[in-house]
Amino acid sequence: MDTKKRILDEALTLFSEKGYANVFVGEIAERVGIKAPSLYKHYKNKRAIFDAIIDEMNQRFEEQAKAMNINGTDAAADSKIYMDMSEEHLLKLGREFFLYYLHDDYNKRFRKMLTIEQFQDKELADIYTKLYVDDPMTYQGMLLGMVAASGLLKTDNVAIMTLHFYAPIYYLLTICDRDPSREPKALETLDEHIKQFNRLYGRTNK
Amino acid sequence: MDTKKRILDEALTLFSEKGYANVFVGEIAERVGIKAPSLYKHYKNKRAIFDAIIDEMNQRFEEQAKAMNINGTDAAADSKIYMDMSEEHLLKLGREFFLYYLHDDYNKRFRKMLTIEQFQDKELADIYTKLYVDDPMTYQGMLLGMVAASGLLKTDNVAIMTLHFYAPIYYLLTICDRDPSREPKALETLDEHIKQFNRLYGRTNK
DNA sequence: AAGATTGGCTAATTCAAATTAGCCAGATTA
DNA sequence: TAATCTGGCTAATTTGAATTAGCCAATCTT
Image (cartoon, rainbow over all chains, first blue to last red; front, side, top):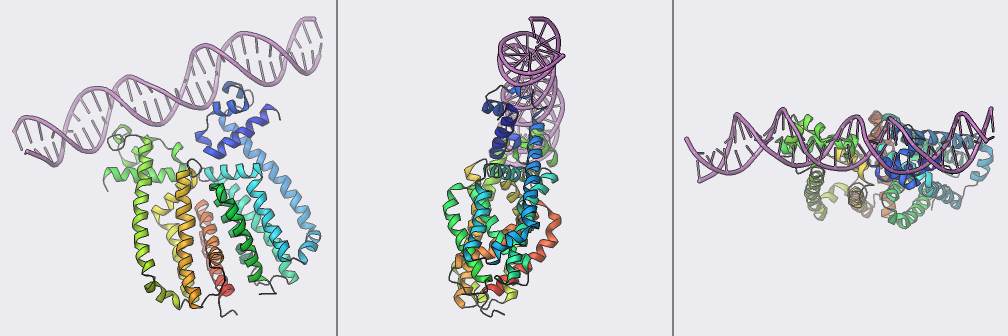
């Protein structure tokens, strides 16, 4: 990774731990292994580093959205999997989402940074809402909607069913961000949640 | 309100909007209507203002906990209400909790401040977890547990049922904190959530 | 009512952190 | 290979925000 990228990487780490205002450019430089003034050869100023992080995220996001659209429009492919959605499949869906968001290093740091900075700036709040509220609800709503259409889940309100599936995942995610020592317990709770979700909404209600 | 209290009040407002590090003591002073140096007649330094806010919260919290314990140990009184928990009662419970947390000015500001500062300091993370995760789960778990014991809700796992009740409330709360324009929609969603919750767990499952 | 305390003010002071200036070595390129 | 570019460095410079000094009027206190 070249210096310019390493700066973004270390800055993101620091911003996600302490917030933009509590990070000194000297700290970022030190982590990268250079002196503070050298940093200005790569970015105009401290703010430009932050902005570059946001830009990079937008880029990554677009790629991801594109990839999802392929699997989304081409949802027939996916739906084959979810048409016969068993409890195991549902568990897999929830766990994968949870663990990806929780442990993917970039995601985790970016989410924490946004958590800290979200009230500063409407743009940041909007990004947070999109990434961690609206997009997951849309995507999971689509999948659960297909399962419901297949009859394996029954509901007359897919949106609320999706809320019932996702809100606990989101809740557990924020708990783990705050205190990673709760992860093992959260993982157990996650499984119990999904099993119970399946029971509550499953046709074979037992 | 005397100056010392007004300082805490204005500081909390500013900290909840911009985070501790982005607030200047001069700003706090200005809001209070004094000059920055005068502020030092009341608090040793900027940090002491923050600490005093935390102390005050702890005090308020203890009082509240005490009040809850009265209603909690003396739960027989409460349970009379919840023994015949109708959908309206359940809606009331959820809505009251939600609206209280969302609109109570002190609560709202304190929660936003903690959201911003939670990753700085384990103590702050713990306070957040206590106030917005563990305590609500305990309290609502107790109430829902009593309702379940009365047979009006059926479950073999009160903890997960409570998660299913509370996680969506928490999720909606964080959405509204981030973007108050979503409140009306969130209120609607809240009602739908609780109605659906009631249907899913209710004995008289239609 | 004299003395002490309180809480305000203006004018320093301090200090830390961002940024700029200007030098230089090694890599790149014409 | 000479010229340029790149990205590093040290040594300023700037700035701005926290805090301290020291003054003063009003208000308690005895």
